[in-house]
Length: 377
Ligand SMILES: *Cc1c(COP(=O)(O)O)cnc(C)c1O
Image (cartoon, rainbow, N blue to C red; front, side, top):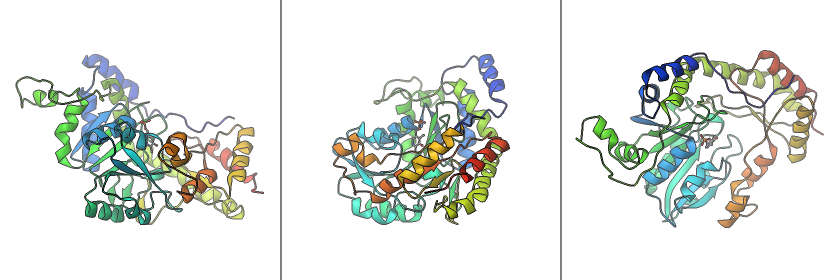
């Protein structure tokens, strides 16, 4: 059997809703399914405004534009994340300032945050890695004391919670991804969550080519026109229909993922301990989103050997996030080895196991059995 790292899951109603889009004669953006998706997310999370976007990357770009970031501004970002988290800000001319991560949750290390703040810091971007919340009490206290807005890249964390409050509801804005590899998908897709209401009107204008089209449709102005700079970040209603089917089944999707995560955790515990492999850590005050299952091997050699061992058995396991500060772009901004020591170490050690909503029990059993045949030398 060959077991992929990821496989998209269809929950059942996607094609019916897409047929409905054809009947609605509304294929462009902001149609009935986009509105339903906005409503379900706003209601479930208690967020004042949600706007679907074409990707999480584009939602991040919107947040950088809405914060009016300019050349020379500094943005603090974890060194252990996907490139989009910072690219969106660099596109506006901002300079990334890389923060190291905690060795337990792999989230931005809040104890090192304040030392990175300068008079030029214009934003702090946090990533809830694997859908486990960052230490938001400490982060928000520091950010508020310095008057710096926080953006949450919540691509992993939809429906996860920190101290009982949904991830994505702490910062001025947060971004979601509906890429094929995320818990909920439309192939490509994303959303901007706006918590600070002062950004709502500008966000609507920015997303609709710099026009006040949303106000026109609400009857607040009698014609719509070019009022500001803008672009086009809205997905087709066809994609929203696909996504809405998945959002409606969120309980089913999340409980399937929880079961897979807990099975890995239970079945691999003794093997991990024998082999000095570290299991994922979820603090008691965090409810994770069950986005991924990762293991931390003792070093690069054992991690690479595990990948090769699984590959021989037709199982695709992957690693991710090369330290951003050591990438060719990161080096341009002065990144050097040793700047973010935990990130550098974790990047060598981390392995992600196959994990997808419709993973069959026998597929998972095979992954577990294959790992148990591996021992760290
Ligand atoms: C997947 C991901 C993104 C990018 O999402 P897209 O929707 O593909 O643009 C951004 N940040 C993180 C942390 C991600 O995992």
